Length: 141
Ligand SMILES: Nc1ncnc2c1ncn2[C@@H]1O[C@H](COP(=O)(O)OP(=O)(O)OP(=O)(O)O)[C@@H](O)[C@H]1O
Ligand SMILES: [Mg+2]
Image (cartoon, rainbow, N blue to C red; front, side, top):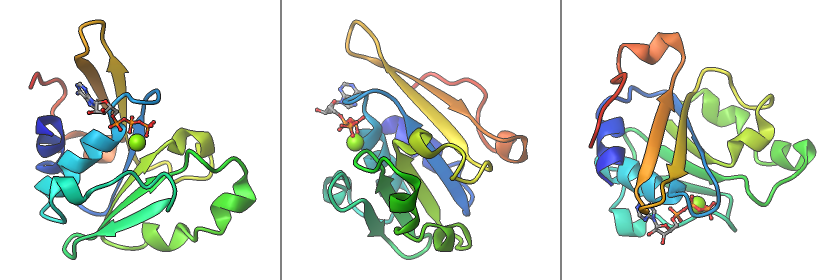
C-alpha cells in the first residue's frame, strides 16, 4: 500500500502501468495502493479483476484495473476494446500484460514484483525516458 502511494504521487495521467510478477507476488495489492492514493476508491473496494477482466474506478483521474491472466489469444484481447482507453486521460493498471507485450502501447511504466525469502517484496520500476524525471530512481519504503 505504501509503495502504491509513492508511485501514485508521481503519476501524471495518461499513464499505463504494467504490473509484472508471479502469481501472488502482490500485483493486485499494489494496485489497491495506487487506486486508493489516487482517490479513485477505497483500497478494500479494489478487488482482483481476474474474472471481470476490467474494473473502473473514480473520476479524475479515472483508473482502470485490468487482469489479462485468463486471456491467451490476441483476438480475445481485441474484444476488450482497450485502444479506446489509451486515448483517455486515465491511469490504466494492467496485470499479466506482458502476455500481450507487442499489442500494448510501448509508452508504459513497468513495475516488477519479486517475493523475497523473508516474504518481503522487491519492487523494480522501469519507465520510458519521457516520465523518468517524474519517478524516483531508487527508493526504499
Ligand atoms: N508486499 C507484500 N508482503 C507480504 N504479502 C503480500 C504483499 N503483497 C501481497 N501480499 C499477499 O500476497 C497474496 C497475493 O497478493 P495479490 O493478490 O496482490 O497477488 P497478485 O500478484 O495480484 O496475484 P495474481 O497473479 O493471482 O493476480 C495476498 O494474500 C496478499 O495479502
Ligand atoms: Mg492479481
